[in-house]
Length: 158
Image 1: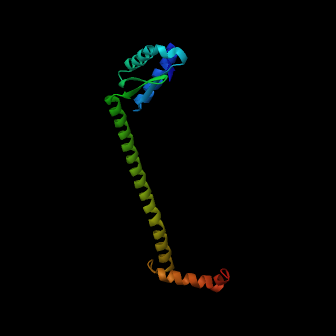
Image 2 (image 1 turned 30 degrees about the vertical axis):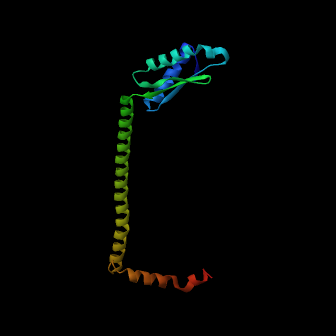
Image 3 (image 1 turned 120 degrees about the horizontal axis):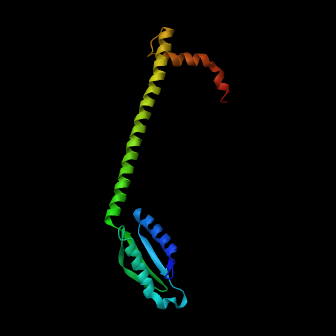
């Protein structure tokens, strides 16, 4: 939003912000507001919007002509196809990189998980071998656990 009497520096700020949004792939609505009798000078508003579109012709184009809506005069600037393509290519590259990083993380986690699963099995095998039994006799281990705990656990749940 701006007035038709906008100063040079303020105009530069508007151009800078509009170009930032357009290079991100967004459309920008430029509005010139008139107060009171300023509506009589709408030709200056048209000139301002046309000048703004000309200053940014490298990155955007004006959709249609500026339109008058009550005390406002507005137009929409949309990014050029080259700018849109560049934004889309950048997004695709970022998504591809994220997908690649995610797959590497999954691989690392699965390798780490395999190591964690293999370690307890190896410990159980070593304990079983040290006890003189085979490492696959899990039923014997469960039976001995019941013997160790005894009937003392019945009091805990009553």
